[in-house]
Length: 299
View (cartoon, rainbow, N blue to C red):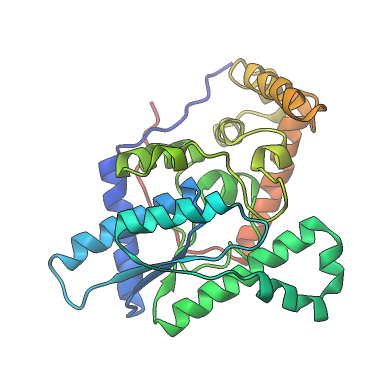
């Protein structure tokens, strides 16, 4: 059975490609820069670092200057470390930022959507949509565009985002990078290692992590997604020498952490990724922010 090829990138080249895309997107609508929501995680941190680098290069030779503004919008569900990491990042990038708790904004929806507060899933999506409203309004009032922070695995692999929440953005700068490549880019840009290595979480439910929700991590998503793109069937992927050992290891790790596997076989994991991928493609048909064309190298 043929090997699944995972892409690599030249970070300098891809930085330039994403940076050019950001500059062109801002210029196209006559905006004054970008707004980005910061969670303290690697995706939003890398997005902010990429935009900062792009604007610095542009501003060195052009006027008026473009500006990036970071907004940190926690609720009571977020850990103090989330805000601390996000604030440390914006200070290191030397960009303007604001911190606003949106807890009262979310609670205001009890008068119209009390049913959403009976379920962590729906309340979490409500938080994401409320946060998106704050960010898009900030962007509008500052005459800026809202930059999304979704990566390739989330956006196009399994659609792991809220459709009218964190998916409601003007541009999606890192949508061509898998989680693995986002981490590589983060290291290249000098993002703090503690942020790069953080356990991925949407921060929308108590004790939530992406791994706990899904039953597998983004390395599995990338491998299975690439396998499907390269012509392998679900049946072939379940016995593939690159996929099966990795998934079995993750199932065992999940059991050790949470007591019982969410998905207890390679077949179920591959089927779950395929199901979620179909959902992701359905979301793309509704909302598909512009994404940069980047150079992925397959060897």
